[in-house]
Length: 162
Image (cartoon, rainbow, N blue to C red; front, side, top):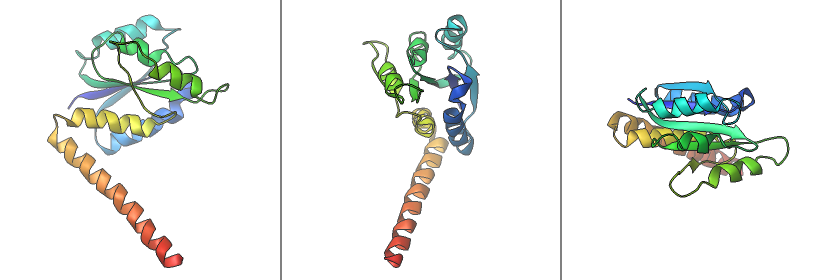
């Protein structure tokens, strides 16, 4: 199975990344987590992206706040799918990161999830890998059913109470 590479621009993004890691662990998808900054460690970020396919990665997730150039910098150096997680920052509540992540030029796509949506980034990465992995497809189907069953159980509970 291909690995998921997770890159965060700063350790302040760790709470968001932990949600992604939890999903990947549950689905038994191998992953690596790194801190590389598009601005402070551009050489290391570039090298990671350039070598990601050869190193067994199938999807990359990049989380960053504020200017949030990390996902774009990673995508510029690989043709692997890149999923950007805009992270909430101290000034514009994540809107700056969202706009930076989603506004990529033609030819350098970045799939973008909601602000701080680490779990959805991991699920999207899993769905991409599952295109060619029937065992993972089954795990995703089971998770989707379990999630639906939880909602339906809550529906029954609320109907009984009210």
